[in-house]
Structure formats: C-alpha cells, structure tokens
Length: 298
Ligand SMILES: [Zn+2]
Figure 1 (cartoon, protein in one colour):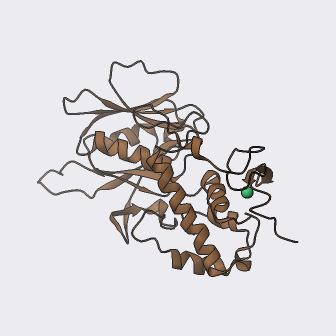
Figure 2 (cartoon, rainbow, N blue to C red):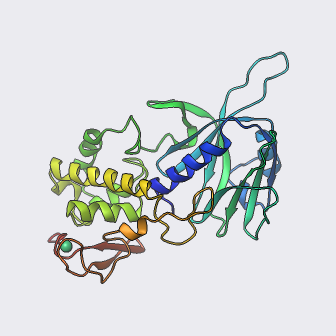
C-alpha cells in the first residue's frame, strides 16, 4: 500500500493537472470501483458531473478532491464535498491523453469540460482501491476540512496540526510494541511498513520494544526519524517497491535505492555491516539490524 510520500507525490501531480477544472463526464467500469458508495456507480458518476475541483488534499495515506457543485437554480451555492480516492494496493491515478489506449485495468475516467487535451484515469490492477464521496467536516490545519469518514485519523507529520509532543504523550502510556504504534493511523497517520522499518533503523530501536519502556526522547527520535525519512522519500518521488506505484505521469519513484532496512534482508547494515535480518510481523515482515537494533529481552 502506498504510504505518505507516495500519496503526496500523486497529490502534487494531480493538483498541477486538475485544479480548477470542471468535470464533464465520469465513466466507471465494473462495480468494484464504486463499492464504497452505497448508492452505486451511476449515482457516484452523477454526483461528480458538473463539479469543479477546488483542491486536492491528503491526510496520511488518504487522498481526496474537494468538489464544488454547480450553482443551484436561483444562484445559491451548494456545499463542497470530498471525493475520496482510495489507491488500495495498486491504484494509479494517471493524467493522460483521451487517445491513449485504455488498458485492461482501467476502472474510471474523468473527462473535463475545458479544451485542455487531458483526462484523469483511475487504473487498478488488484481492485482494492475505489472512489467514494463524503461530507467535509472542520479540522484544525485543514483549510477545507477533512472527509467525515477520515476524522478518526491522526494528523500526519507533514500537517501543521501535527504535534510530536502530543504523539509521544499518547505513546508513552501504551504497552504495545513501538512498530505497532507507528502503524496505528489514529495516533499518527501516513506511516506503513516501509517507513516504520526505516524510522526504527534510523533511531536504532527494535520494533518489538514496548512504547511504555521507551523514554520520551527515544520516542521523539523515532517520530523525528519517521518524518525525516518520509521527507527524503518524497524528494525522490516515493518508493516503487512493488512496481505498481507510479506518479500521475506513470513514472516510478526511486527511494527504494535509499532504503536501509526495508526489504534489505541479508545485505550489510549501512552503519555497522551486520547483515539485515527479516522477522515475521503481523503476517508480513520486519527488517532491522541485529546489532544496531537489539531485540528486547522477554
Ligand atoms: Zn547496524
């Protein structure tokens, strides 16, 4: 699943291509793309048609467009709402020429009313992604608010409302493992398996260590490392670890070349030369350095 840097890369690309444009037509292919929209695909397409895209926003791994509906009869303005685009495991948002061949995994096309010769396509091979509309509710630091279905998410490290001190305080009283806490999107959003492993490696902390056993400064170092590694990943256009993540022009990120722990089993630690180990973690894997990140004693 794309994490914060990958979603932010997509958000920026999208903003530069679709901001201020009005939706002329939406075509949805298959039923899965609208499965989070209870009223069905036809209703979803209808509700977007005629809307202007006022902003492209993100919190953590979630991306949404702020849609401004056309004026009501009599000139009254309708409330903007969110179109949440879930990228899932393999979702891609591509800005392409309408003449480009559709390909087998095309799930949605958004055409615009202006004469600019591009359209927005949602391509999703594994179909875990999809689109849904939601009401926008006020949230600190988010100028358009956040979708009501995403209010449970904690602020991510790139948001003005994010407070390291507040997250440290929340973590200190938890008995859960630090890696599990980093992945808890209610505490801090945007971090997944890749950047959790990278942050823990950078801070020299084993992911199984209990939050409550770590000092405030140690927790602060892990969170600072998470923000730093995600910033550097964003500069590299994200990590294209499974080859399906691409930006809106179809290009891959190249941060996978800079990974120090994630996916590096058997390769020498960049700090001490000890081969990176892989351990099972929540049906997946964790990568760490056996020497820099000693396992906690039971
Ligand atoms: Zn090491």
